[in-house]
Length: 182
Image (tube, rainbow, N blue to C red; front, side):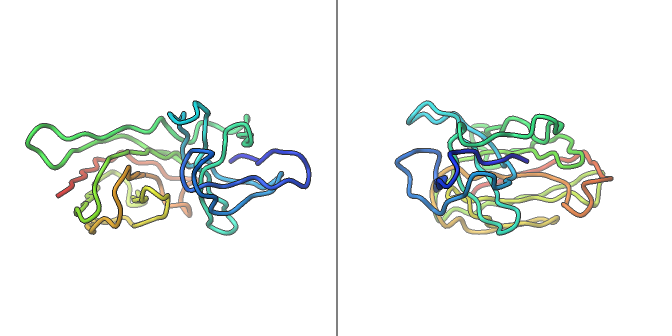
């Protein structure tokens, strides 16, 4: 978790992409609590940006790093996102890892509109969950089974593995995730 910080009474822009030139999706206020989804150093402005989720509303977007204060006492809840690439001649890749409590593992892959993405997960916990997020940060799929869908836009997709929120206090699991693009 984290807190949005700025001068009292100001609005904090929440953008579609990690750039000050990206469209503003909505805004937050100083003191708003957010969940950090991931972070990147933007190539367009060199700044740290956080992709955040507003837990009360479900709204999400990108906020400049200087306007987000991560909770310092919280244990690490995520790992650096890992870019997935396919071996020459292959359209699928398998990654694996372990998540515990509120930890998440993010995988990034580039795909084009009209392609079909499929995900398949197996693991040691029945509480493993996969979330597929579009380049605009909107959720395309959330579930615990196999999934396949036609992609609506071109760009970087995030595939997240976590424990379902209702079981995060007590659960952990190792997993193997296969992602394919056709």
